[in-house]
Length: 239
Image (cartoon, rainbow, N blue to C red; front, side, top):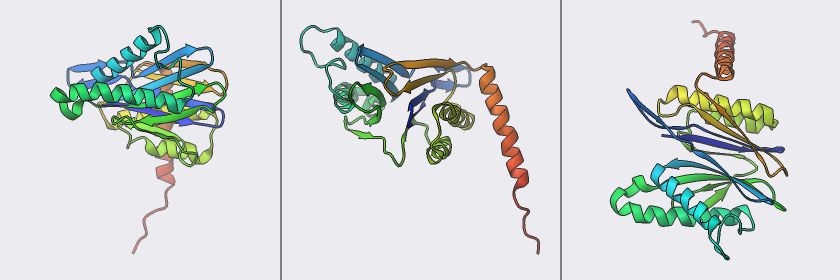
């Protein structure tokens, strides 16, 4: 399983992915699910993935091959906007999935969050489905999730309603991830964080390991305040 999330804020984008690919009792596997691409001075992209690891890798290999190809080959270096990039990413994913589906069936599919900016356009986030189509993040609900999304969703909704700044959004995103990992063994660290500030065309990347003191402090603060909140709830009515 996987959990990836992304928020579009007034100041930019916050993207966070776990790295766990399997979680047996004695066999825990990890692999990077956030991929930063800088195919030109006027653009930067972040791709987050959930689903078939093999399909994801082949999609990324195809992206690299197209970027290296001579001539007018369509690639992330030639698209004029994020929606065009989503169409391109969706086409690659659909072609690869269809080829592997003959033997793997539905397990061959992958879903992607595509974020970033092409100069002259607003930074954006798009969800690219296995079928190759996509949707934009909305102004009313400016976050996207893929993978195990249900446990950490309420944290992101809090951030949306509060219209938080980037620094606060990072804490909210990590809290959402911690909540999800606590509820589902198939989500876990290390966690990869990407932060994009509008107009910079640069992604700041940070990895949080399982033994991160910051993550431990975040868990402790949440636990303390949750217990305080429970203690402040009104008493049950008596009859």
